[in-house]
Length: 242
Image 1 (cartoon, helix red, strand yellow):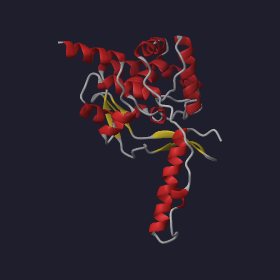
Image 2 (spheres, rainbow, N blue to C red):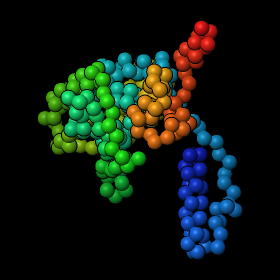
Image 3 (cartoon, rainbow, N blue to C red):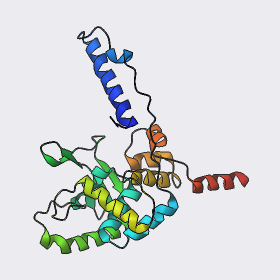
Image 4 (cartoon, one colour):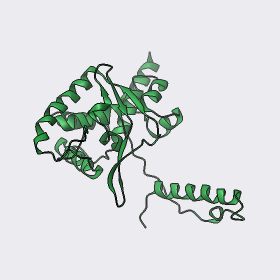
């Protein structure tokens, strides 16, 4: 039915675990998934945005305080899209120079946009640089000028045009429009997360990156988020030459 490889593989694993539990509880004599033929599918891996294109995207984003802050958070700090949309101004400790990720925005059927706990279900605190704080402060000042048009104010860092929870579809649309203006190819919003962690991996150790990203396992980072780049390969070869 056109489902992606990730959805198919995840569905197979979830069903297998569920039926194994049923067998363990004595509700079923065997796990039927063990005898089911899983479709042969191949995952299409999404990689970080190439450096040259990310620079173009970032430079174009700098023309608008909202998008500058959104790309700075997405491409340099690396939260999931829903986590970025769930950020509130109260999550920033300006004195300690930290930002706390403690919620995400998701759409629930029949309910609409709601706040939910994070995927790892743990609050995650990240240290911000002086430059990042200035970018966010500029965005906040410009946002204050728009509040006269708002219907509500939920203290969100990246709200919709009425000050309420932002839809991930709109977030993706704004990103696609930014790509067009920047004159680069088509990328997914989630690739900003991989871009952030891949770039950080080239300038720090994996333990620091693990703590920064909020992941519990370094193997998850290496297997899904951190990739070698032309620049990192060139540096490695240069060091070997030395």
